[in-house]
Length: 89
Image (cartoon, rainbow, N blue to C red; front, side, top):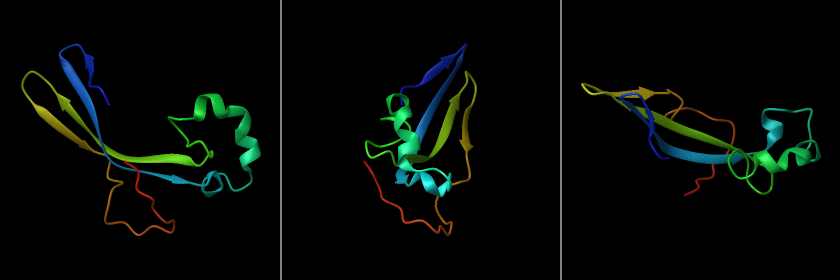
């Protein structure tokens, strides 16, 4: 991700991992056909071509004129998950 400038602040997202999951994991009552009409805005940023949802684990680095701040979203590794993870580069 390109850094975003807001005044004298610079914000950068640093991705650790992206994986894809079936939309049914979050929306158990929906099917892939329900997502098809939304393909144009979902792919490629929010879902893969097969309409599996893309989930991201990342952090933010905020640089000010005087500080560098790490914003940890606390959803990263060392968690037990009931879904298999597929790493993407």
